[in-house]
Length: 300
Image (tube, rainbow, N blue to C red; front, top):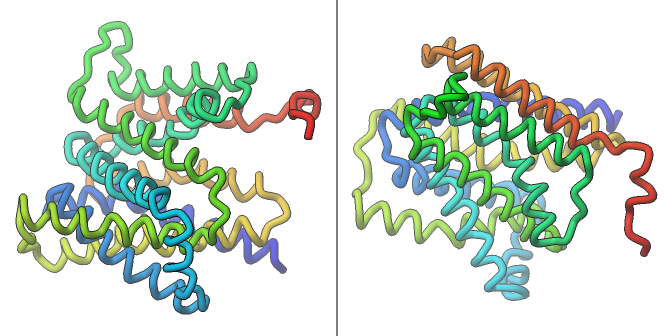
């Protein structure tokens, strides 16, 4: 029964994440990236607070923050503040059908950063994954014209790739975080909220968006930043087969591209699909543990 629930939670999370690229583009028609961050973060704080209250965990917020205040300040400034601001700016400059696959290469970035900052060994299949992944990034960014290396919007491409660095850095900092995951994410949003709201009000003012814009930004706050994270955590906690649940995430970018073509009317280039397939194959190579994994593990 738990496996059935785990699969249900995991599929729901993946399906919701598949919709957010479309929601990003709809929201950016009414909000600037900074305004979008402030509004979506506010919705996310409300949602995560409600979840923590339902789970009787609100009393852990103050205690967790007091245990490592500078650590949680750093986490909050990286994610959601810097990560989502840069990601939303990338989506503002690029078609979502390009920004989303580029951002999807973050797991490959994480492998390289873990080797540098955590001393993890890079295996042969990790190098293959990196080669395939970043070759896929180049194919997507150049729309298939690899030899010319010409980018329609180099700033947007650079921002999408920088977002992968920030997301990987966030997870590296989280590797030794023993606190409750819902409380940790809630703290990040609570800490970053005064910065995003303050900067938005001071620099750009509060937007006078139509109700469609507010609905879209609320959707982003709920299903990119808030509720979906809890669904995914529950799926991983309930399952005995983490790999099977984790592999569900590979269907998200393809569903996302279908939605972008159907709802937004974006043209999906064949080079985007080719590049995305290369990234996915790279990620699957990275997950292959091989027969020598046991020998490669450090002695305890």
